Image: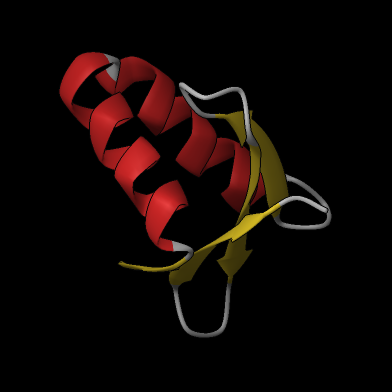
Length: 66
């Protein structure tokens, strides 16, 4: 499994990993099982990010919403 994309979004995921591991697992599973393979989460600065799962590459991509 690989993570790539927006640097700020990746930093937020690292923060979530260190402080709310259960929530990170939920986000990853949500992106994998959603019909459009996307989920949205908010960072500490309340900015929204989109976590996209590329099923073919088995890769997660983080983008800023908007």
